[in-house]
Length: 139
Image (tube, rainbow, N blue to C red; front, side, top):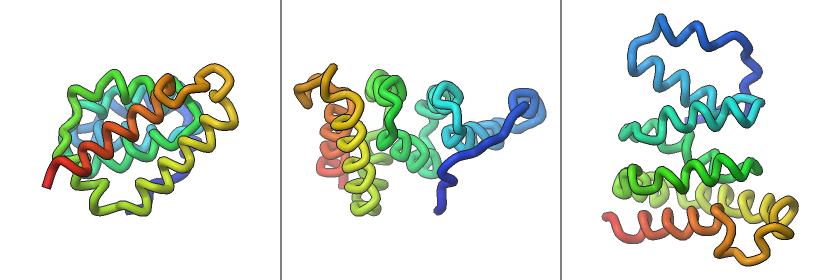
């Protein structure tokens, strides 16, 4: 699967009225790649509760980005995520998971280390720790 890096679509909201539920979820997945972080976060919130394997890469991709509110949104929804589903994705995509974690660390170092000097104070580190638990505890 190849996830687009950014989508520069405008005027998309009216499209949802004409989509099936599955199409709507898929379109929200694509809009998690929107150039506007607020749009990405809004559509992330729509897909976090969806228990489909094809949704997982879109959620994990967002964990490696610089918008702290997105990390906090994923963290707030951790209890609703399916550990088996996410654990399987991470086990099957170790290099991708490591690269995404490295991106998160880089953004923390560049933008958030001053406000969150301790790794335990930063949502990204807590998220990746939890996702490593998902990877290790479900087989």
